[in-house]
Length: 637
Ligand code: GAL
Image (cartoon, rainbow, N blue to C red; front, side, top):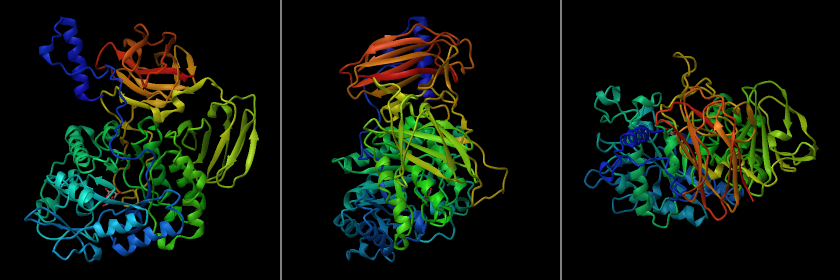
């Protein structure tokens, strides 16, 4: 929960106590009041995770027109474009300078000759026209600060902006409307990735700044510390980008990709502003780093929705520990990104793509999982340091499961009917999505995983809950609009592997903030099993007190849950009342509950309602980490 929200709740509580609530006081609106709205952004177009290619992982900033067009041609020629890989995105390294008489950005025409327009201007329009003519879409890259990541971090960067201090200020800061108009209007790009190094790295103490090379800005973001991050200021900059995009592209036909690496509490607000949002620092082509990026998104299943996806960064399939000599790892990376509904953005020099690589990137069954219309990110059915089991519910009610061996040695794991929320007493059919092999089991099956292997299957069986869907099976339709976090904490669960550029220099990798404490499917916000008054729930939504969850209702008639303060809550004094709203109307409510109380059944008719809201209101606005459980929460026909 934001500070503003907490203040709002405290104010509301104290005004209520003194009978002082009047319209004149203008107390902050109570964020737990139902709105009857789905607050995930409707701006931009990403009903399914975007797919395509980006220059960064393949070429770093050493990008030019020839390489880009070769990638575009390869996407078309290999059939990958027809399978959905349509965005061709230019990353860092394209810009030359900002012209000073009118602030117009100039393109590095030595690298992009077609951008030279003859009148002294430069334009990417010929390039985007060519891409569009091939049936592709075009993406561009900028920074929300004055300067780029290359300027901030890489001295020997290829394609570094040139000129004096002001000319080298190529980022959006102070130029949001102009630059968005240029890139997304005049130049006709369809996607813009907006990085944040310019508001992160340009502190007055930075040598590049104190030596006069760049102007100081902020910093507004401290990657390691939320307390040193100006979250409202960062959010406001991206909000202004959103407004500029809406003005420039009234047809709403674009993608806004937010690149804040999980910092600045972006987890809690990206879903209202962006179509995809990075959850971690950059991926590297090695297993440990892939695990890190995976973990940064894998426990945020309720924060990915149609039109706003978690982005654990681009694919490194084809390179380093994910090259074709490491087929197990390459397939794992691809399968996991597909299960997580991650944008599938290839980062490989497509001129060198082998049939083997294409068979991984182009696996139809995996692409279909990623692009499934249900829009549900996989949920962790088993979460361990050694093995993890991810289950994804598909639009047709079917399931997919991925079993990941995180370790460098072989392991055996058991897949159970319970993991899949299927009945134990009838057969469950598995289709291996890499080999097509079919098998059947009842109750449980032992599976052998090679080092770093991910087995991934389509599953068919009899549902344990045949009347409808558990909310934890439809995370794409559940949005923690208010998640109840009072003081954000760093996430201790994310794999802290060796960083290639740092190795063991320094005192180690630390937990960093990234959404720890947010609502979860089938777990408490802190990764425990759901349990109320000694009663275990294998399905349900775990949240915090003072939270409001929005649920989209696709035609179901009844809502049911068994609710209560979770047994894992620390405070014995906290009191929480649970209430269900259908399109803003209260339809079911519990009394005030304390920890240890037996779960209370809430049942409500919701026929015809579009949005159901689940509010867990605490008796105080500043309740810290009081876990609450919507046990067996389900929508039924
Ligand atoms: C990083 C970003 C990368 C890449 C790079 C370019 O901040 O996370 O994906 O865009 O900047 O310099």
